[in-house]
Length: 187
Length: 431
Image 1 (cartoon, rainbow over the protein chains, first blue to last red):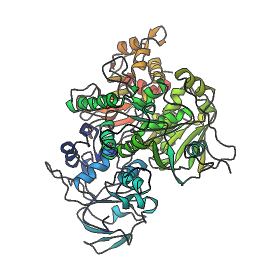
Image 2 (image 1 turned 90 degrees about the vertical axis):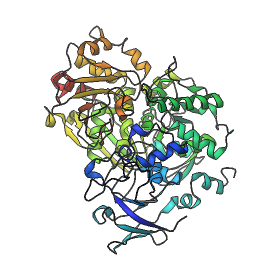
Image 3 (image 1 turned 60 degrees about the vertical axis):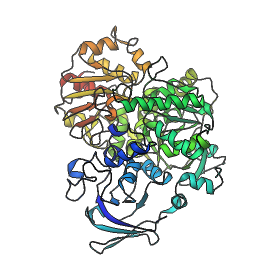
């Protein structure tokens, strides 16, 4: 497991639901087929209204037209990120686009589970309202062991909550590897 | 100290005498449901981790209901149903409701109880956030992703965190102009779309007891719109009679202990409540209908797991009978059984179908249809800048198609009244 995640961040607001993360019209692609899975990267965050695309300014594309990868590595969100539908495509599209870590005030339960159990990205939480403190395009560094995030653009450091009870699953890689370690599944 | 109904069900399925809110436990699963949108991904994960020739843990406990993208020309949507079909054949699964045949049902959350798959005291997981609907039958039911579903297919187990229970009590029977949809929109307006994250929401009181089983389903259906993990209603005669009419499988009724501990309790007097809408673009953006009365609309939509049951259409028919709609009005029965009942149920001597056709509404085929937008050719999809009033569940930007469109959520009464006037209208005008 990576202890340091570094890269540019993309900032979104509160209650971003899974229809905004990956609109339903793209759910006909099957994530179990490699060629189709890539399409989720292309359409990640495609449902955001223009003013919500990359705060504070808005109108910033998360993935450039025609590309399957985002230039952003870290997603910063407000409250209740990933609410709405249970579609795992939401976690998958962020991973496919190149997101490695997300920091939100808190997550919707299903998005959090999907991200952890599927091993797609690490859902960090913080008590700080980061969406008012960092800007889309800032270079950030998340230090997993020190539970902190440093904004390399401004030099400010922010505390993160310890990952807590799901850490063993994140360390194992996903829920299947964890279950094998626990002897619940044959390895 | 005692346990809530949700805690008791989880404890029993974890082989424990008691559990407490916040505890992480492994539970045995009674039913796993999946559909055409998340089934192919789930099957892929199952095969990846358990092997190409793996068998599901228990073929009697897997239910597959294609319902999302059925009536579309989208080839990948059809391919996804083919993947389900092939898996069902390979695993010899008895509970599959195939497209294009007599077994086809439509919306999974309504099909599950119709086919006897929802039973008190059980644990149901489904790859759809509205799986929480089945809490109306006194069971623990919640939505999960493909990974969790793939894990269950192989092991029959899942880890869950025991949720604390928020209790919502409705005192007094419902006035004739209110529906369960008004009650749940009222609650979500109070606690917000994140007001119940990681918690159970339990509904009780005379107002809930006096609801029929479908209205109880509407209440539990929308707990996810407040972030709730599961919605639940203690089973009573109404529940047990319904379940026994659908299945001969044995089940055990679980009730709250009298000294159970709740996270919180809110009490509502139903006589003090009024018809409400959730304005764009959030289910918690509540307003009284009379506060937004007259807002111009271009479309009305009645359908989905939330608002496409026969109770919903009976309500709409009461208002639409002998009247015509002023805006495009789409009617989508949740299931083929509901569709069939449109020809059987009558209001004032006319069948519901006759009433809707005469009113000028368009009637679609049983499926999820435009509730979640879907492929561009989906029946009723909002493809542009429509302003729609809808009996569905969610109105975040782009939910029903275009992110330029606006969606007001409301009860079938309010949707029908607004369709007649072409603007948001209090249903009390017609009731």
